[in-house]
Length: 315
Image (cartoon, rainbow, N blue to C red; front, side, top):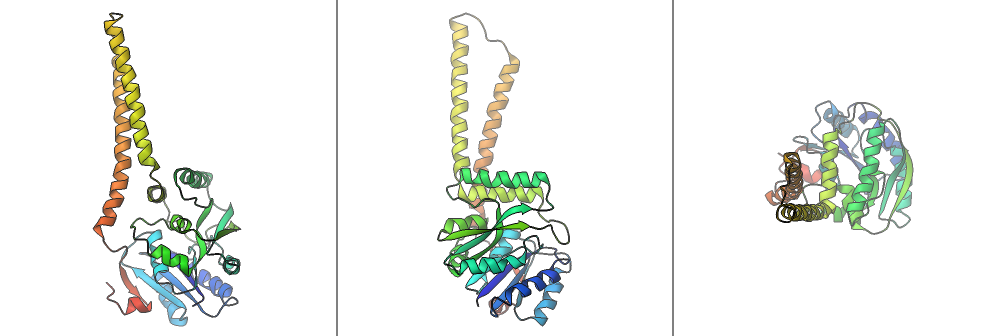
């Protein structure tokens, strides 16, 4: 298999027919040996039935149907795990990322690269606060992390089978694929493109999901929050020490009692707030350790036409 295309799907019935058509039109001039792996991440609309219809008329279409919604990153990971191509593309199903760019990604990969990621130079149809938070996120995580994640990139990219095998071998439960691929190293480059508006439907990425995704990225590739908690503890302890010295000096040298119920309460609340922040940071790391220690399956497949899953005991 030359090219595998992995497409996570969640309630994308309005986009799937056109997405399939554009993917086929792009891939056929490149090679006759390709596969489209759609991973249905617990969709509640007609996405699964559309995928089954496509699979009946085109043997290159494969689908994996999750038992429930496990999340975008695990859907993409499942597609990678079962992709057999020498080159693997990850693309979303909302048609914001143009499938036609795959041709340029593939040609660039053949020039000796192992990763070619699509880098956004323009994002249409997105609010200013979404653009601002995305911009700040990439810059913030690069400041915290030892791994440099390319700015203004999503999961849309093409990777070699070598990189795919490395990523699939990583056992962590909380996936952050763009970080894992960057961490793998080897020769990586980018192609600039203009991101389109969503073709149909509404975005499934709420601010709560974005926040969790950001936490997964930060905790997976940086210990800096733990160090910041330690630094805050030292700073607060230092401030408290000087406050004690000042209070004792006023009482035993100047013979005055330091007045101020308000200042006392402010100090207590400040120290308590710092302690809760530090406990929260530690708790986030402990929760991710617990997720991995449980050793639960990353996802559960209900139905699939992928050979190795069809022959296995699908739940």
